[in-house]
Image 1 (tube, helix red, strand yellow):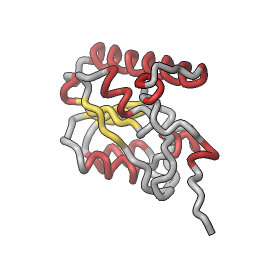
Image 2: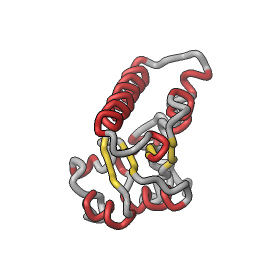
Image 3: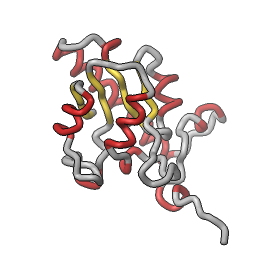
Length: 150
């Protein structure tokens, strides 16, 4: 029996940057991109206003859907790719990442004082806990860093 990649059923876009390299912008992806850009810019503004951390002390976590695009669009930010492990690696959407996935990404990256991640992550429980029932507060203590959602 042939294995199916369930990504195609739930979220067909695996890397938003391909729309720019080809010069083609699908209308649906254009809305995703504008939303992502405005939320990142808002996160940057909030971090600067709060003045607790310099931007070079903050790691920005994203899934593979926006990783290449984010590095290109915001090259001065410290982007960390959080790959989906819990579902076997076939899901690329950040909405199904768990803190386990994010912890693994942080382990393999440089250590930062704070991390920023999409509020779309942990969407299953509206950002209150991941699929393992770990809350953002528990995760902050585990990684010994601040955690912000954009």
